[in-house]
Amino acid sequence: MRFWVFALVLGGCGFPRPSEALACQVDLDCKGGRTCEGGFCVGGDEVGTDASVSEDAATDGTLPPDADPFEAIAAACTTAGYTPLAGTTSLVRDVPTGASWTAADADCTNDVVGATHLIVLSSEVEAAFMKTKRGWVGLFDSGTNVFASVTGEPADLRPFASGQPDNGNGNENCVQYKDNNGLDDDQCGNSHRYVCECDGLPRAP
Image 1: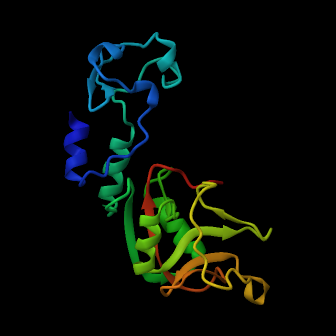
Image 2: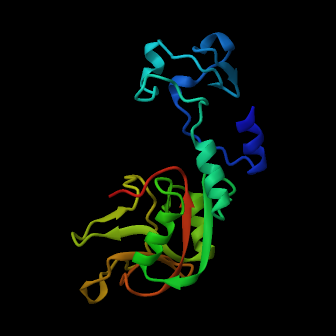
Image 3: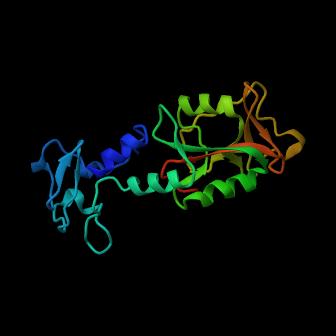
């Protein structure tokens, strides 16, 4: 029940990746003394023996205490100044001061290690949000002329402005949301505002 109260406090943020192995409809669907709440098995402290939950067992063979491990992540992000982004399952932290892409990337990544990063446009809602905020996003070119998101998500949205990316001066390897037109590649050392995102995904190496 703690998670649902917390989710309401966050305005329904609720990270959407509780293990499907712990999905349920009734208490009988749950193992290890868990009960079915909100469609997922929660609580309980017994070791699971069912093969369907073995992939979620910790290395010592015990199950985590709750179905959704992102409760703690959401709490940590909230403490770090993140707020829910309506219409998504993410929290964001808007940074209106300028920084290089590298500094912005490091700042976001260090907020909650393994859970925060420069915003990746994973939905139309996030793209529309960045259209109003503008600034650096979690998209870069490592020098291979192929852009990648900082989380390694292959299906992120990339609404580049007309004529972009153009790799001006041959060294525009980082991406900002510029004006109202869309994404624009820019020199990584230039200073722009930025938005950090907390969605439980780590910064890819």
